[in-house]
Every structure is written in C-alpha cells, then in structure tokens.
Length: 244
Image (cartoon, rainbow, N blue to C red; front, side, top):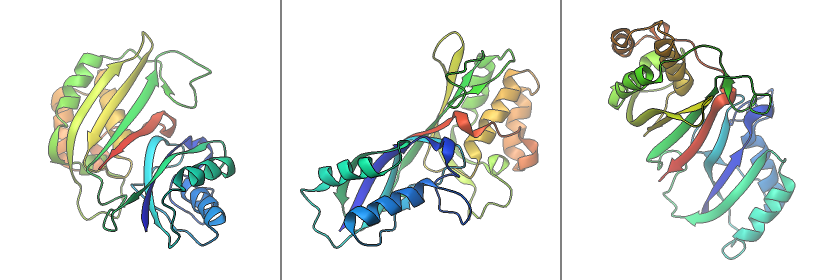
C-alpha cells in the first residue's frame, strides 16, 4: 500500500531535505525512523527539495509497505514522533491511491519568507533581520508582474538540472504582520531551485530603490540569473503548504 506522510520541520540543523553523502538531512532521519518502526527498509519520496536551513510547516512524502497498516496509522505517527528528533514532527499518515505521487501529483506549493526590520534575538533563526527602509507598496507592484505562467530562468540557480524553467505563479504578495515584521507569500504549481530566495532578494532591491519597476520587468525577460538580485538567507524561508 502507498501512504502519504504529512510532517513539518525546523531546518536549522539540516543540510536540506534530500539525502546527501556528507551532512544530516530530513529525508535520512525520516527514512531511518520509519524503517525502525516498520522493521523493513523504507524509502520516502518528498514533494520537493528544501535547501540547507529552510523550514517546512507542511511537507509531504510518500512511501510504500506490504504491512496492513490501516487502523494503525495513528499509532505509527505517535511512535514516529517519539523516535524522531525534536525538530521534526509528523502531523498525520494517510493511505492514498497507488498512482498518487508526493511530488508529481501536487497541484500547488506555497512558501512564506519572513523579514524583520529590527534586531530580534528570538526570531533570528526564522526571519531575515534587515536594516533598510523598504517601499512595500512598490515591492507589491513588482510582485504582481510575477503572476501567471512565465519563464523564471532569471530566478533559477545556475546549473540546476531541470527540463523547463516555466512556472505558473498564482499568488505573490508582501503582507504586514506588525510594525517591524513582514512576510512574502508566493504560490505556484512548481518552483525552481533557489527561486523563492532569488525572487525575494530582487524584490528587496526594488524596495530599497536600487531597481525600478521597469528594470524588474526586464529581469524576467532576460532569463539570466545574473540579471536578478542576490538570494536572501535560507533561515527566513518556510514551505507553508503542499496541495493535491
């Protein structure tokens, strides 16, 4: 049977989601715990990859087992949460159809990027603390230019192994949380490697007055990573939701 596992994690201590030869990853921890509890080798396939230091409030992966687990899934979730490190938490496990795929069946992914305009020692691991005056109205004008099915090559990490850099963005907006805290919301059918952090970094350039709206539009059309702004730090980025 095929199962979806819904979980969340604090990415501070991990080299991203995907297993790597040198560095602890979320995928490795999850596979290890599942294999111990189910007493068989388990491989999990994630809905996507998150980079080193990126967090997830809602991540999904699928795995398969020959064990009849229907009716025992709450117990499996409980045991996983006891066994997994404190920075990884299982939300639920559910059976799905055999043709459901954590990555390819997903219809939308939503990310948030958090920034703080003052020094906050309690938020330093979960937001980027900046010290510039930003024009959020202008940043939201630029963000609207991202909506639709477009080529996002300018915001893709150089050397990424992807067949296409086309993505369909359905939402992009800066939201005020308090006088000193904002977050950027972005949703699309798929995301390229490093895309959200590159988008945020380029929007920050607009907000600082270092890039005009016309220049931002030109960044999209140039389809070159060197045309966009720098990628912002990973610690402010959260995968908020994966939809099916």
